[in-house]
Every structure is written in C-alpha cells, then in structure tokens.
Length: 401
Image (cartoon, rainbow, N blue to C red):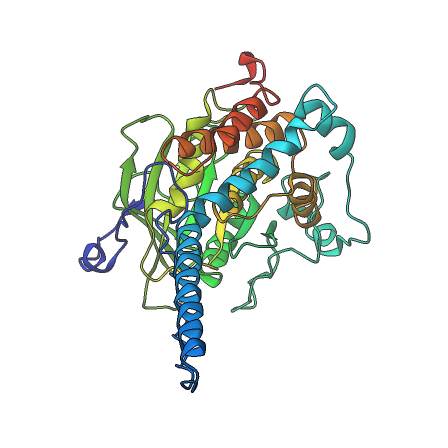
C-alpha cells in the first residue's frame, strides 16, 4: 500500500448529492399525472320542435355537470392514489404477521421457512473452485452465480457472488462473500464489469481474520497485479461515527487509461451472529446506496452487498431494502415468496431466524416513521403497523451491538 496522486477532475465530475428525505431509500415525491378531462361532445343538430330543443338543452346541461363532478372525483382520487396504494401494500405486509398462528415470526421461520431448498439446482462451478470459497458447506448455484469476463490467461471467470433479483423491482443485488486475499482482484473486476457504483460491506476493520481489500486511508492506493485501487475520500456519518463510513474509491483497470468510481458503504461494528441495537442503524445502512448517487448510475445497475459469507447480514440488508421498496411502490410484499426467492438465488442465506425477523422489524419501523409524515395514510393502517411490530420483538440484548 502506498501514497497515490489525487485526480483533480474528480470533484468536478464525481458524485453529486441528490436531495432526498432522511428516511427514504427511493424517490418520495412522485408527480401523479392528472387525468385529462374528456373533450366536449359536439352539439347536436337543432330540432324543429321547441320543447325538444329545451329538453335536449337540459339533458346536456345535466350531463355536463355530471361529467365535471365525475372528473373532479377522479382527480381527487388520483391525488390520493399514491398514499392509498402504499397503505394497501402496508396492510398486506402487516396481515402477514398478524394472521400468523405462531407466537412470533422467529417461530414461524423455524417451522415453515428454515428448511426450504429450491429443487433442481446444480453447484458444479462451486465444487470446482473450493479454494475460492470461504465456506466449504454453503454452496453456490450455477444458475445465479456472477460470471466474470476473462481478459487475460490468468483471469478466472469464477467468483463467489450471486445475482439476486425480485419480481416487481428493477433493483439487482449481488450478494457475495468477503474477498479472500487471492480473490480481491476478482472482486474489483466484478465491480468494473458489472458497473456496480454502490457497494455495501459489513466487516470489522480491526479483525485479524479479514484483511481490507481497499485502502482504509484517503489518498492511498493498492496495486493488484496492474489494477489500481485508490481511496479518494472518506466520509463519516456524524450521527454515529462508529457505524458506517463511506469511501469513494477510484478503480483503474489493468491496461485501461480511464478510471471508474464507486461509493463503498462500510459498516464496521456489526459483528458476526449479532443484530444492531436499534433499527435506525440498519435503516441507515440500507438507505445509504440510494442517498448519494452518481449521475451516470442507472436504475438497474447492481448494488453489491457483502459480509463474511454473504449469507446473513447481507441477506438482512437486502430483504429490508426490497420490503421497503415494494411497499413504497404500492406493491404488496409476499414475505415468504421474497425469502424463497432469495434462497433460490443465494443458497443458504438466512441461516438464523433472528436475521429474517430483524429485517422485517426494521422495514416495519421504517413504515412507522414514514407514515407519521404522510397525511393520507389511514389511522387503522398506522395501528396495524404498531400491532405487527409486536409480532417481531427484539431478540435478546446479549446478541445485539
């Protein structure tokens, strides 16, 4: 690791902040298109009978009033539609919890979800590349694994990373393990090839088992067999300086003269097999990739999420994010379906019920905060959110950070 030069054009052409509410992960202010009123009907030909003319005139006037009234009602409904859609989606989410016969979500998970495995999946490439896998037990499916492009004879197309997508969402997540020292270059190849300008990482910087795969200090760089990784800037969340640090990373690929950039959101104090002490911590991590976005970032550009094995803490971030995204879009989430969809794509994710439970609780907590700011959310929906939270109590404080 050594000292590097800082490109002068970065600040001018680099990441630009977009104004968003503090508690959102997606756009809140959506313009609702107003329905255009129907054009006026052409006047009918005059009848020779005077009483018929008057009758026609009265009928037309009454019809015109009804049209204006109807049009006004539609317009009013359109103004409320976004809030109503969100409320309906939230209702379905809450009913999933309130209709459970089990005493808690944790019990439900253990009895109905924990043993789920998708049928007819192969793991050939995972078995061929055992030295590149941190876990020798948690497999990776061939169908959803990320495949790298090989540019040299020394390159490998294998990396322990899975593409995770959901119906009704443009967002693609890549769940991956923390890079091993001989796969760090492969990780940055994936970032470059997949145009992933947002990376969420969860690891302890002081850990003796996990060595940093990027410079932890600004204006320092790593040289990975021709790939230059330079940390240009570090931002600390002033609300909690020990939780998430944001790194702006410059990546110069081997043989390439132009750099690409990514923002890396590093959570440094969420240890293995534990959950944060309050939901706002998780929500801050979940929201981060959507708050400061590079102007060139496309909606379908993937968000990389990693932890030690890419199974539990990563899955917690992904499930929380997709639950919030779907509800805000007015799309009722199918929690069981989302879990199975994740297991279908990232084998063995959610090895412990407390992570599934915590993701649901965090999403509900977000909605509780969000609905306080929305005047068009019915009171009964707000009550349902509070009642649903009782089904997902905090786990034992000894397991939290």
